[in-house]
Length: 197
Image (tube, rainbow, N blue to C red; front, side, top):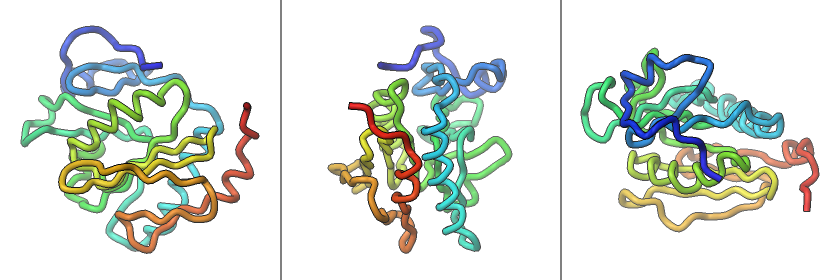
């Protein structure tokens, strides 16, 4: 299931900034996609726990972790902000280059992006946003599947995401882009509702 499209017009970040705050959108190549309603508690618990672990692990280091909503502007070249046509809000992200940070959020590819999948956003995150993150140069892209207890990891190799690695949400998973940093799953998974079959 895909996310609803706002309309069939081409939009830029300049327009996006003037839209009402009660409706959240992501822009991908000028197309405005309506964000899903408020995520489930399960989704928020997973995103929050990953953010918490990253934030703690990065204390005193140059990289910074953020949790949605944060606008990530992904220019295709050196266009001015108002002309950017791709603005996304990853669930969790890490940025190691402080020059990419400003009051409005992030301009340029984060080093790590984590999306927590839900039925409403799964195809959007796995297909459309994966291509966007690859094109932008995100070094590592994690897709967390809470219902299936699976993690899919894409890593950028020579400008493209290679074949993904798939892990169970068990023990610890190391981040390739942040040596020495791992995400621990066991306590989190015990809190999640039992899978429905």
